[in-house]
Picture 1 (cartoon, rainbow, N blue to C red):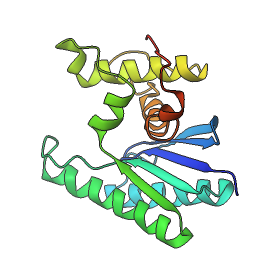
Picture 2 (cartoon, one colour; picture 1 turned 180 degrees about the vertical axis):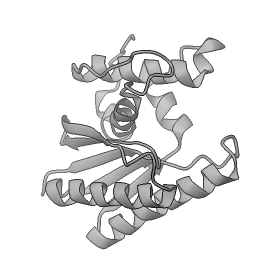
Picture 3 (cartoon, rainbow, N blue to C red; picture 1 turned 135 degrees about the horizontal axis):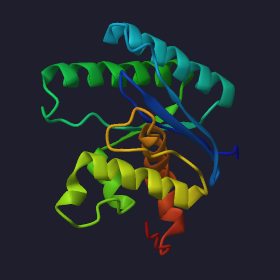
Picture 4 (cartoon, rainbow, N blue to C red; picture 1 turned 90 degrees about the horizontal axis):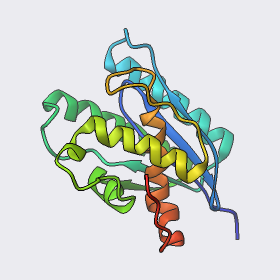
Length: 180
């Protein structure tokens, strides 16, 4: 039986967070930030190339990614762009014969208990801050949270870590309550 290596992703056309788990250990993580001045299609190609490089370096047996939300909160263009991002990922999975799983945002957030139960806790900025705090606590990291609008926040990385954790590891660690 070969070791399970899981690549988890929080993908977009502006910044894609990734995390790699080998068995039950977080072994690497990072983010892909394409040139923001390029058109979204060019950013998507750059992101796909970088994901392909991670795949070739680590040879994951499975990829878990956040699914495209089927609502138009970001507008139709956002849905088209995220659909293209997901299509690129599925092409990579097909090319390298890698099993994949798409996880809805609400599902992974619920599994890791990211929502604190307050009205303010539903805000995207609060969820992003909690994501960073939880990933730091679970994996003894030092991911950065500066402010709700800071471009230096590491929420893309923490989301990728928690997507993988919620789907791949959490069921193995049931009963472990984490307070953030």
